[in-house]
Length: 102
Length: 322
Image (cartoon, rainbow over all chains, first blue to last red):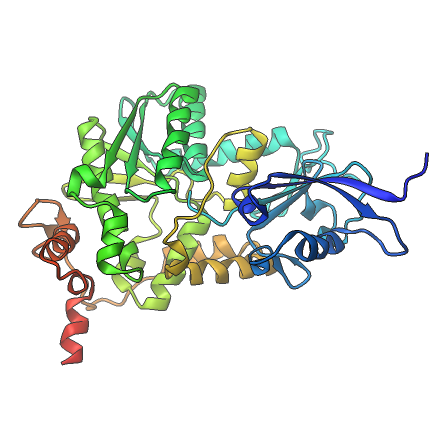
């Protein structure tokens, strides 16, 4: 069965959810086109489609703001090539902020 | 291509440790994290058997992990410690009231006694009122000073002989940077110790001193520990934010930088003959102080007399400007 969209689930935690109307889980259908859907593209897409303000609190240059941890299917993105990791259908991406009091 | 755990246990790695660069599976990560805290505790001789320890608990990520790990290690290695949770309510609407609910959950989850002290009860001032009075530039100074003394008093009330806080490696590295940026020689000489103690005041220990913030968050995530995560509403104006942003950028380039800064801080030796404030006691409340009146009493005096802005500037600054 083919599909013309990439279905993934994005989760925000550690306070990052505040930037997204306090909604922790966002199920997304990303359009499949000639481009590659990697984390770099996803982060830019989130900035452009899910954020009305304070983009600088989530994104810096081509990546997330330093201090935001990224996990894909419960695995540290440092093990997956960080922004170069290519998304697969059904992936669960977690963005966890560490930028708050302990 | 999944990465295998560096220990060769055969399991799939789930994180790369910034401190060591090694890739670990969940079980080996828990083990490494817990063993390192155990090592910090034993090599630093942070506790003695039978001691009553007040764990400063805010409901945040660091203190939640601290409470969990201390209970875990106390059971596993039989430290024979009597652990208690101590929480301070600064009276910041929308911040502290919510996180205290998390501490109450921690109390139930970890089965530890809990005491909550408020600035309102101790000093007659909530932080919200302090900010109304002094504005948003120096308010953090008030809060830090009041909190330290509040922890001290709470710990004494609970019969504790030391206070454990969840300061992590990132916090300490940030403090070193802040003290360098502001030229605070006296603090720079003290800030890296795992135990800070002085006559009359309870020792304060930092068992998570060498734990990277990233690993604390990952530990809490994989152990499914609940914590409250919101920035204090007054934090965006705090000086520490500059040090924090700088440190995070550095960490991205070279993750070992956090340990390196702590190491440098520990090894900074000041030339002899530099005059540093001597620690004595406050003439009003008896707490540790390098001036005649301790900082908390000085700040309270200025708040109550309505001259709040004066209390924060150092004497030396005043002399230099005349």
